[in-house]
Image (cartoon, rainbow, N blue to C red; front, side):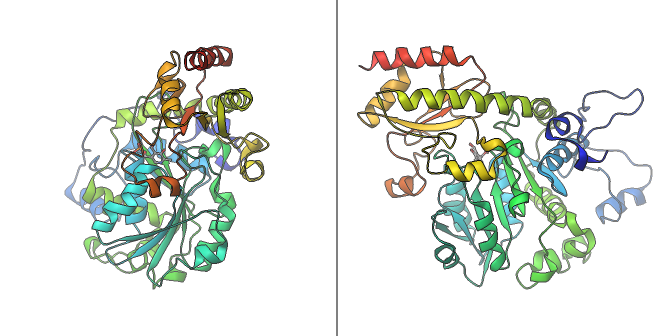
Length: 430
Ligand code: PLP
């Protein structure tokens, strides 16, 4: 199938699995830990990476690979892998390029879990991260780079502040320092934004969110554009260009070309750290992906209605949603996102501050309080008390989280019903 000619709505359904005569229409679930061979030599060739094939699901599984291929096609990448969570995807994407003694630069406005991973856990492993204001100038961000800096990281649409990342600017900064740009594209999904077209090199996802879309399965994905020239920066990336002793001296960039990054992450990191999703979860993810285009369009249309409603409410102190013409990121969203659509997520504060915001949330009846976004069911969360509660006040502000901030993820319900729920909640806090 020539994916390049197909539109995203078609790729959502067709990419990754092409049944031939008599084969199942739906991706089969290969619920097997292992795979049988006829000779010991056949298996030995797989271990030596001389032949491609499956031998143990901790590294690769056909169901997972079909779904990863669909996500690669949607992003316009050369290859992809699935992970058991979005956290594992962020972790692997960084660890595939950094080791103890290395450094990387990240936007400070990122998901709280990713911030914690970068600031605390990776630091314990000897990998240092400098956080920068994503809206700072190229010179200011460039000043954070060191000789041992290996990558630049950002979120295309930040959780929870819904700031839009200027991907072209970030790509320019990364490339002028000889390192790749990795972006987390969870919130816009490839339906609204294809970061490779703006210069990003590697994309990560929490597939847990819109890609799954129905709150069924935690999962992640890493997609490589295949565009970064590892050999041109061999001094910085010996892991990509020098022989790997654990694979008989094989060098990934030379042996696997555009698939080098994903191959290395699979055969080293998956092999050793084992964060593979269950094939059943990947099957559920694929069912979600089939309707991704239709759902994302509806999430965004509903969100536009709700943002316009909230921006008129006298009880609302402030609202952030890139779809509103007055929003700081409106113009960038118009440029970078398909039809200017960002996602179904927005954030706002209620007049009277933190306590009243919490009281308002507690008064909602139809809209759920859950630790989630991007679900078919609308939901709210108070990041300062929930997802970001491990951050200090200073870190909260740097992550774009005000204490009264309510994160609102608009689902697929009828917006009249959602507005009625908000109206009764506003009435109950009067
Ligand atoms: N990236 C973003 C933007 C997220 O919102 C999340 C989770 O909310 C993650 C990564 C982590 O994903 P997971 O919860 O699947 O580990």
